[in-house]
Each structure stands twice: as C-alpha cells, then as structure tokens.
Length: 314
Image (cartoon, rainbow, N blue to C red):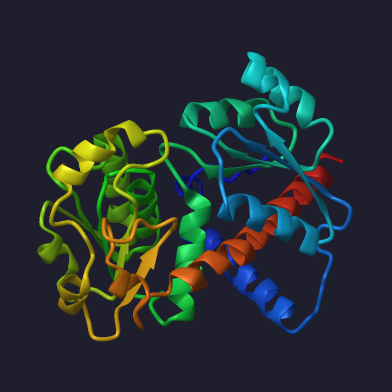
C-alpha cells in the first residue's frame, strides 16, 4: 500500500509523475472539464491541528474529483478521548477509501498508516509537510523555476525546511537553508538529505547568513518564525530571528526574475515584509491555489496505485 507521508518515500520519477498528473487535472479544471477520477470515493479528513488551506483544498478537491470529504476533528471522534491511534485506523479505514491526517508528532501518522487498509496522506506533521512542497514545486514549474533552480529557504529549521530538503535532494537542485544559530534543521533529516543528494546531484548549503543564502537564487521561500504549537516561544523567537525578515533588500540579492514563496499564513512585518508579500515577485496565492491541484494529483495517483495492488492481489 502506497501512502504519502513524506517525499523521502518517492523517487524523482514518481514525484514528476504526480506533478504532471496535477498539471493535467488543473488544465482540465480550468477548461471546465470535470472528470470524476474518484467517483463515489470517500476521503476521511482527521484534524488534530486547525487549518484553512488544508481543509478547504482537500474538501474541495475530493468533491471536484467526484468523491465526498468527511471532516473529523479530534473533538468529534474517539481519538480525542484517548482511543489508540491504531484502533482509530483499523476502524475508520474499513469505512472510507482514503485518509488525510493533520497532526503533531510524525510518529502518529506513521502508526496510523501501519494499521490502515487505505492510502494515508500527510496533511502536516511537526516533522514534514509534503503536500505543501508538491504545491510549491508545481508553482515553481509554472513560473519556469522547476529545473536547475537555486532555492533559498529562510527561517526556522522546521517541517518546511525538512520538506524542502527532501524535495531538493530527490530532484537534484541547489537548496540553501538560512537559519539563526540554534534553529538549524534536525541532524538526522540533514544526513538523510545528504544521502539522497549523492545520487541526485543536489547541492545542499547550510548557513546562518540570510545574505549568503539568497545571493543569486531563483526562489526565496520562508515560513512563520513560531510554528503552530510553539506560540509560547513567539517573543523569544522574535528576538532570535532579527535580521531574518525577507524584505526588498533581501529580494534584491536574488536574480532579477526570482520569485518569493510562503506557505501561509504569513505574519507581515516578521518573516516577510508587506512590500515583498504583495509585490510582483510574490507567487504566494498561486502557491495557495496549487494546494488544491497538487493534492488532487496526489489523491488520484494513490487511488490508481491502490487499484493496481488490488488487481495484483486478485
């Protein structure tokens, strides 16, 4: 059974295959060709973390594919009352065709997938956010930055930094990660990315200098300084991250036609200036829309893989 928990589980060719499928489905949608790729299928959506883009994009996406989305918060199901994750998995996945989970610890979604009878998609964990990176890469491709690009990620060594590492190391492009001292990416994730980079030819650079990271790049990406669940660290992080705002001076370091990306929601005046976020280089709302299209591609791809496995089993 194929799941979509992290990009480390996918080859370069598979990632490109999903991106191409996402582009095809997006083009059909823009031409008002509604193809019910998942007619009658049910997507269970488990949310332990709140969301705007993740809920709307998955719920709208499954409807547009001909299926039904079922929203399940931890307040609505027994998971929020102490039921083990493995029991929730073995119950829910006997009743739906696919599950998306947005939660905290990555180990939770791995346990759910282990006991699941259907494909499981990671809608975000504290360690990885792979659906966002598929939307980001789709956006890069649409803006001519999908091949041989240099990308800078500025900010916290969080789940977005980890996911950029997985994408770059699989696809073979150059990634520079700039973090304040003490906020570097997890050493195990970095080591894993280095292993993949040896095969793909990717170049990974770590620095504590935003200028070094952004000089001459094609793409600058950032994220909030205090991720969900770390709000109590906000004030300290505001002090520690001084100098790590992506502003117009930062953007001028990049190539003239560079694009700016942010997974949103953005804190204007903190990790990014209002001028950059609303400026000509910003593609953040293209990026947000592409969550819908990329996730439709992921769902259809996983559904097709499951059908192949079922036929083999027969």
